[in-house]
Image (cartoon, rainbow, N blue to C red; front, side):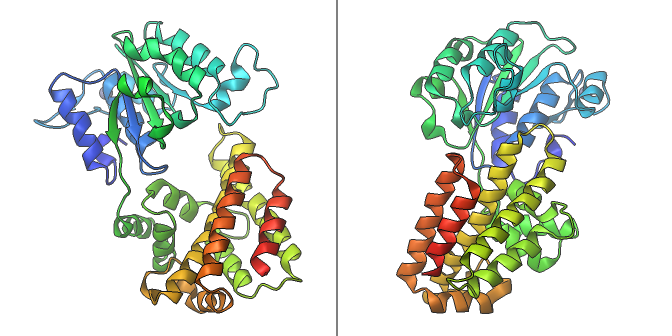
Amino acid sequence: MSLRDIYCQERGLDVLQRAYFAGRVAHAYIFAGPVGVGRFTTAKEWAKMLLCEKPKKTKKFADSCGGCASCKVFDGGAHPDLKVIQKELVTFTKDGKNKTTPIDLPIAVIREFLIEKAAERPMMSKHSVYIVKEAERLNNSSQNALLKLLEEPPKHCFIILLCSRTERLLATTLSRCQVVRFGAVDEERIAEKLTDLCVDQDEAIYWARFSEGSIGTALSWATLKLKDTSCYQIKRRLIDSLADQTLGGSLDLAEWFCKASATISKGLAAHHEKVSKKSLTRLAQKGLLKMAICAFADAVKVHLGKDDILTNFDQHKQIIKLAGRNDIEQSAGKIEKTYENLGWVDASVNEKLIFEELLLNYAV
Ligand SMILES: [Zn+2]
């Protein structure tokens, strides 16, 4: 893979390429945009090009060569001059033994894996590149500690902060970085990409709508391998169940949600070895809640006569049933309630409680 293979992020790439050819590549970038639109992939491929011994250049586009020693080591996944900074590193900090992965990006990780390391010379290439994942989780003290490095990074060093919520960054952080924006990808292009990967058409359209322009989200849900099932089958069952839900069956349904969440997080674990189990469980829980939100949002659309733009267009009958039991106000209330429980996921509330409370609420 190289910069040329990046899908649907022409604008962000263009900003980077123009800076490169003008000799003004920033040493501190913020790649801003929604989760899953390709910021990490772009940062990685940009790093590969910066580390490459002999980048391939046309008039307006520079790319990694793919053949030099640096590119080969990079493709092997172990380039010594590319460092990915994420909250999971906390267990490898000096006082981090037995620490669980926190919600915030802790200052110890920033200090020990970024600030201290950035001063060291690169080992293989002329440069070193640091990619900070989830920079929106940098708390104020981590950001303050980072300021000096962002202000005057060593010449060999490039830092890229990936951030989905720039409003959470301090003005002092923002002002020291060049912000490159990455936008949502068109629904049609996401569906096209999924069908290219042999995902069925209906399924592809569903995930394209579900992911709201996040190609990474669509890809990961549509292609996730699960034991004896698929995420799409889980979503179909979820919509069937919500359409036929009774108050008496709510606790059983909550139990099914817990089981589905466990199945999904197990599937995710096989693909994301470096991500903590807790983060993957949260991801699975949020995915199920998002499916429910889409169902009630569809019920609202039915009431407004907008049946042609349903996310669950493939289960139209069930959505009509759901809309029959919930008028616009009730549907909107349930969406709001689900967002509230999404917040509980980050606050590490017990999973059973999150689903039971929510499903009892749905049934009334
Ligand atoms: Zn190369």
